[in-house]
Length: 252
Image (cartoon, rainbow, N blue to C red; front, side, top):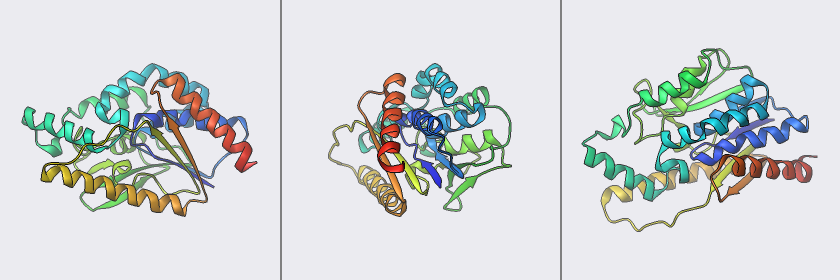
């Protein structure tokens, strides 16, 4: 089976809990796919061979990741967050494609946390090429840091990596897979759009959700996990317990 994780919000750091549940039950996968924020725990679990060790590392970097993604850490690419970031960009006089934050901040994080190695066997990291308009898969043999910088690049906050890559979690929502993991934080109240650009953001979000819905329909199994508190201990434990319950009721 192919296991896939979305990654458009901070709750996907809880993917370590899901992997821990599978590891304890001796459940392995031919391929694990990730995009966006889920790549952090997925890659850490892969290179350390230990979801427990990945969890410890995540607790140490949790607040750094929160700061890297600002408003989008809490709720992902929601309409209110997009509008708020756009207003900050406008006030700062920054071009939208350049992003609000200097991307060296994100690149330095990746270089510090992850080794300069190839993508491990059985792992696929997805990003979206905005120049060619297609999803790109980095796999065994590709440079791990390069793949992560591409997949972790959230639009509006950071300019596209290598002038073309953004996180596919913003475009397609989730990678295709046989078992898809969707982790969602508590939703904020949506606001009514007023400006043309705000309607554009709503259309972008609707398109992403539609593509995500199609991929969920194609999957053999889907595990949906809702979290209401974004703290490392709560999120990882809830994901672990939900995955354990899923294994007992659906997979075994």
